Length: 211
Image 1 (cartoon, helix red, strand yellow):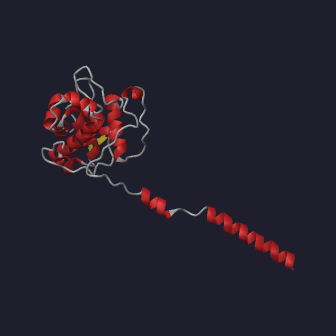
Image 2: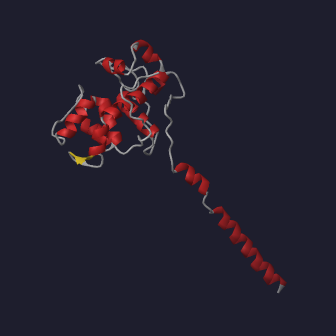
Image 3: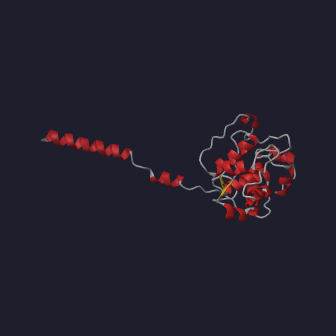
C-alpha cells in the first residue's frame, strides 16, 4: 500500500510541475497589446556611419509606428541619412527644399548631418499633413478607391511622397487621376503599401514646425 501511495504521489507532483511550465504570462501579453507613441519620437540607427546601411533591409515587423517610420525610410533612401538623389531631395526621408522650408528648416547642409533633426522633421511633416488632410482622412478612411483600402497611415505616406494636393486629387477623382512623383512612383502605391500602420499618436498640427 505504501509503495502504491508513493507511486501516485510521484505522478501528481510530475503533472503539477509540467502544468506550471505551460502557464501564460499574462503581464507580458498585456504589455505587448498597446503601443504608446510619444509626442516626439526620435530614432536613429546604432551607428552614425550611414555607409554601413547601403544594403540595409528593414528588420521591423508588424504595424507599429516604428515599422511605418523605417519602412518609409527604406523605400525613400534605404535608411541613409546622407542620401541626396538626382533631383536634390535629401536625407533619410528624402525631403525637398520647399518642404523643408515649410516646416522651418532653412539649412540643408546641417539637415543632412543632423540625424535627430531629420527624425523630428519626419514627425513634423506628418503632423502638418495630418492637419491639412484631416477631413479627407475622416471621410475616406475605410473606403476602397481604385482597388485600394484607404487608411490614415496610407494617406500620410502618400502625402509624404507627392504632397497633400496629389492625395486630394487622387481621392477626389475616385482614383482616376494617376498621381505620380518624378520617378514614376504613384500615390496609389504608397496608400496601398503603407496602409494600416499605427499613426493615431501623430497630432494634427496646423503649420507644424520643428523646434
